Length: 428
Ligand code: ACO
Image 1 (cartoon, rainbow, N blue to C red):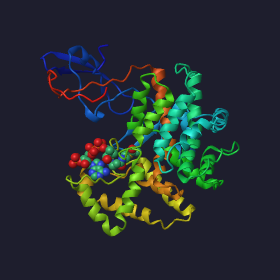
Image 2: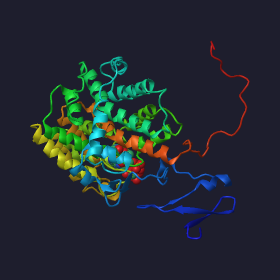
Image 3: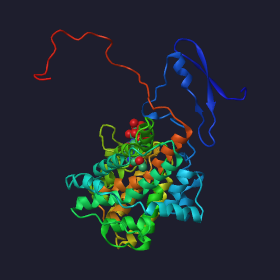
Image 4: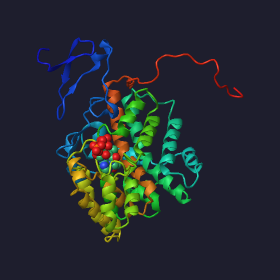
């Protein structure tokens, strides 16, 4: 007990409080601040810049060194040697599967890829030009409706089956959203195809080149997890009320959609199209560096990475391969993106703030090589991230948890009385 590192805090009322420091296996230690509650004072950290919200053994990021480990394995090695399904198994179970376990897991997933007609009808009820993230979110709420009464989230086998259902059905639902936007019928999954092969087949109706399927498999690995990012934290908060897991995953879709997170890949392509040519780059960089202009370079900057995003390095290399494979080696947007990154990295504003291209800066270019519209990019991100969301949900339940319920610094009106003359609606 005497060995526990402690910090001493002087409270606003003059008392002092000893707080335990919890030691991390890697990275920053944390000060356990829950005892503040007994002293009627809270910690204040809008945007959770300095707050660890949970313990986790899934993913570690060293933002200064540009390191990303899943269950201890570097992302570079996972992207080189593993498939997305092996990585999803690793995230959930803590170890890479041996061949027998992987075969069983892949079978468990591939047999669940078809979706029920109810889900198809949810998708079809949307206007054809609806943003596909809104359709996907609705489809996940539809899953919550279909898989509801039989769910016991405390049961390990049930959680395994939920994870398989979700990982299996996501490609089908994503493809269904795309086909609906195109005004075309769903292409049913083919049981004899592999996971990514099936996904690409359901998008276009054509069996893909194995090299293309491999490139998309790598893309999904790079998106599979990223510790307590906004959407994963949202899934954890939502699930902490013991809600239906598919509803918790739908909340992740809502958070991911925003341009500061998974919607950045779509925003990057919009920005590159707006910039249009190398000649305009300087003007846009000046705008990004002007604090009175709300414009930001999309695909730049990261809360945790302050040196480089290792996923961006991997994906940049893959972009060239992918464009060559799809006959778009001279893709103008990719050339523009490379030049933009080069010029921004020489600009004082970006140097001083450690702003580097993140994974989204290049991922949209790969996705556009698949001939997908920009609105579909966040759905590909969601397809990959689904493995991380499920793993964090599972970890939270295994560890035990309390409902997530932050406090606030109240700055509103003091108590006052409602005036005698107050407007009334014509009907109640
Ligand atoms: N362009 C211009 N300036 C930027 C950018 C950018 N892309 N990103 C950050 N800055 C500036 C901020 O204006 C701020 O400057 P200041 O210190 O003069 O006020 C400083 O850099 C720090 O930025 P914050 O917004 O405080 O950093 P935060 O950690 O809150 O935000 C975020 C990180 C949301 C990723 C931000 O960098 C951003 O908006 N980037 C563009 C969107 C994007 O690419 N999102 C994808 C993130 S990765 C992912 O989700 C997979």
